[in-house]
Image (cartoon, rainbow, N blue to C red; front, side, top):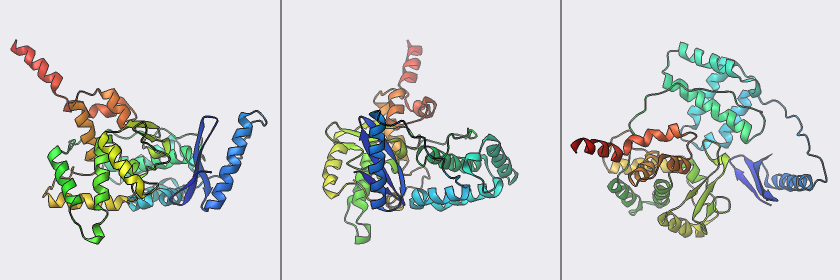
Length: 342
């Protein structure tokens, strides 16, 4: 049996005749989760073998918006540095549309939220954050909790694209040198953060994706792959990422320490990175952990990798998202200008 705790609830993951099953058991005790997993495995096997007709799922009790906020905070946001801020924004949405069943949230409710927030004269980018949190909650309710049938269309207002901060090879080396230098006991995890940074910059994974990895579910050292499942990614799409020799060596070395390569909190990683930034006297606000993802994209572009391949590796929802990196490739522009010289 395969059950694994993610924050408050245990999730089951197994294969039946080539079909991958990965969902919450809805249980907080391991023994209860194992019972659910065993029953579900048997039921699906019998269904596939034709012994029983597919069972109609019992109608689930409506989930109030406040209950959904409490649940997603417990499962995901409580470990985030900005978790309480996410919860606060969602509680404001409750005041706007009321504590309704989440399956009653539709396009009209989204419009009401947007209009009420605009009345308070906050920036459009801030309104986008409110709606993005709501979208995350509803996607989780559909794809992980399986309590709503569809997610309403939530359009975000276009924002001005900021500067894409890329970390140079020299800056990367300085960060790693700082983190791997002898540290006091309270900073003993800095070496772990250094390993994580090397993995993120070579794979383009988001920080949350990197921290969620397990050897049993995601890491295939035989084929040099990291396999991410829908519940681990921002776009709710599975993807496989080939890994470099550097990443492979780090993961092999860390496998001796347990089932997860990294047992770090988002706060620990963020604090360690900021300490390195301060030591380097860098004041650039764009010099953050997420810049490692931009760095991976930039390095691939400079090596001639096409945008579609970069999209697949980074897990972007559309090619339009990947195109924000297109200006980093100046080779074609140089060739065009060179033709004028002829």
